[in-house]
Image 1 (cartoon, chains in turn orange, purple, red, brown):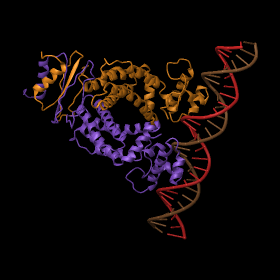
Image 2 (cartoon, chains in turn cyan, yellow, brown, purple; image 1 turned 120 degrees about the vertical axis):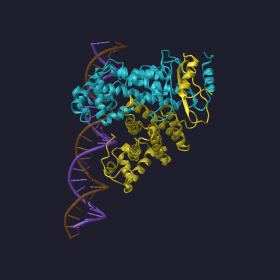
Image 3 (cartoon, chains in turn brown, purple, blue, red; image 1 turned 90 degrees about the vertical axis):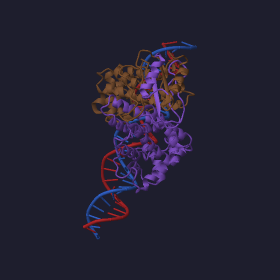
Image 4 (tube, each protein chain N blue to C red; image 1 turned 90 degrees about the horizontal axis):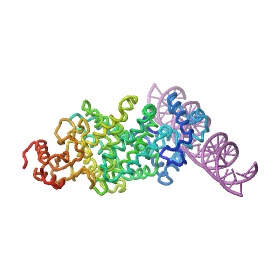
Length: 261
Length: 261
DNA sequence: ATCCGGAGCACACTGAGTGCCATCGGCCTC
DNA sequence: GAGGCCGATGGCACTCAGTGTGCTCCGGAT
C-alpha cells in the first residue's frame, strides 16, 4: 500500500484540469466525517462522486492516499526548495525553512488540515500512513543535510539526527496548532519549536525567548552561554573542559582568523 | 492494517508454549527470502507450516506482523525499563539506555535481524509497517521524557525532539551495523551515535571521540574547533561572532567558574 | 462416562487493489 | 466529412488480506 510512485499522467498537483480528483476528495471526506474512515468503502465514495470505481484508483493509488491528496506536490516543492539552495545557506537554517514551507501548505487550508488531523488521530491505519508520509519529508531533509555535511566526521549521523529533530519540532508545533482547531498562529508555534532546534544544533541565532537548556533537570551537567544579540553570524567552540583556558582562546583566535580585540 | 491491539490470549512473546507461532515465522521467512514478501501469500505460508489459514491470523493480526514477531514484547520490556526508573536517573541518559536495550534485542539474533532488514529495505509496505513500529518506541521515549520534563517550559517540545533524536541516532547506528551483515560491533555503533545525542542534549558526558561539529561546511556561517582529548567533560561555548574576544573569554570564565590558567 | 473449554479448521463473506477490455469523445489527418 | 488515433472512463472479473461463524477434536475435571 501507498508509497507507489506516481504512475499516472497528470494527476498530482499543479494540474487544474480534472475536477474528478477534487470531487473524489470532497466525496471521500464528506463520508469520512459522516460515518468514519473504515466504515466508508471505496464504492461508497465513487457512488457519491458519481464516477466508476476504477477511476478512483486511477487518481489515488490507495484509499489512504485520498486523505493526503497534496502530499506528493508538497514533497516535490520541498525538495525543489532544498535542491535550489546553494552552499551559501546555513544547512540547519535551511532545513528549518523547508519545514516552515511545509507548514505553510498545511496552513493554507486550516479547515481541511484540522479535519484530516482528526481522522489520522482516530484511525490507526491512517496514522501509520501519515508516518510514511512524514518519513519521506524527513528523508528529504536528511539527504540534503548529508550532502551538506559530506566529508565531515559523523556527517550522516548528524544529518539524520538533525532531520529527525526538525521534523519532531515541526510536528510538535503543527499539532499544537491543529489541536486548537486551526485558530492559533501556526507559524508562531512552529517558529518557536524550530527555534528550539536551531538553538541546539544550528549556529545560534537567538530568536525570541532563549530556548535551549543543555543541563537536563537541575543536576550537574554542561553549561552553555551565549550572547543573544542582533548579529546573525556566530561561532561555536567546543572544547574539553579540562583544557587550559589559554588553549581555548587560542582555538578561538585561529578559528576566527583575527587578533583579539 | 497493523497497530491492532493484541486481542489474542498468549501469543506475544514470553510464552514458550505454542511452537505454532515459531513454525509460522520460520515458514514465512523461508518463503519471503525465496520468492519475496509480496509474492508470498498467507495461504502459501500456512500450507508450508501445515496449519489452517485461520490459525495464522490467530497468531498474527496481519501478514506484516509475522516479520516483527518480537516487537510487542520488546516494546513492553522497554516501557517496563522506563517505568521502573526513579527520578534519580538522568532523563536523557535513561532514554539512551532504553534505546540500547532495544538494540540488544536486535543483536541477539543477528542473522534474523539482517534478514528482516533486507526485507524491510526492499518492500515498501514493510518499510511503512516498520515506521509504525519505530513510532511506538519513539512515543514511549517521548512520553517518559514528557513526564520527566513536566512543568518545565517547552517540556513536551524538548521531550519530543530528544526522543526523535535518540531514535534517529539509534537507527543510524543500528542500520550501519545491519548493513555490515551483522559482522561489526552493534553496541559500539549505537553507543557512538547515542553519545552524539547525549553530547548535544544531555548533561555533557562525552564518551569517546568528541562528537559534534556545529559549524556548517566551509562556507560562511559557523566555525567549529575543538581539542580532541581524553577528558570526558566537555563545555560548549556559543557567542556572537561580532562580540569582542574579551567578552567571549569573560563568558567562559563565568561559565566555568574558575580563573584562567 | 460425561461435560467443558480451548485450540484448530473449513467455509463463506467483505473490501482493497489490479488487469483487461469496451466505450466514448475529442482531435488530427487525409 | 470519414476514418483513425488517443486519452479518459466505465465495467467486469480476479486475487488476496482479513473476519465471522460454526464445527470438530482433544485433554482435563467431575
